[in-house]
Image (cartoon, rainbow, N blue to C red; front, side):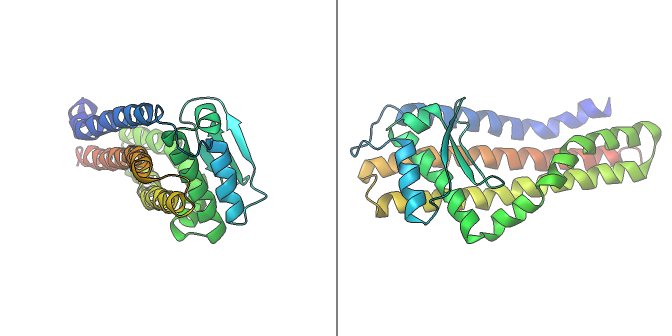
Length: 225
């Protein structure tokens, strides 16, 4: 029953997460209806910005799904969703430029990105193993396992927190280069900023959720003391 009572800790984070998801979807939908004056597609903008930063060898690929856009640092590939890849809207261009920002971060060895990438294996392991070890520790009264579970989940929290400056920096890079290169103008830039700001809130919500989960684990672990 202690799990039920501790669940209340997650409610604020869940509310923020739901709002953030609604915000990013509604904002993207809004600015997907606004075509850019220059008529560039997301793929063209990504290619242009990559080439202007000497990243000629980073391919831009199209992937299925909605808002599945990402830069893969392990394979040095940018992947854009169909809507962004082929779209010429303010929203599509903003997202494409944001992902280009990550590629530039990788090239310049942006510290927060390097740190985040370095802990990915530990995060992948910890996200799955932390709760298993924690629950086994609680069931069998083994404080050592409980502590290891909490420690592993702390790595997950660290990943979410480090992600914040990485995402904010990529968005700032995107908006500056879109303006400097004359890709977007005036209200178009404001629209792209709105899209990227809404997307950033999803990362804030993820960090808040993971922090809340960590606090919950700590409180549960102390409930039997």
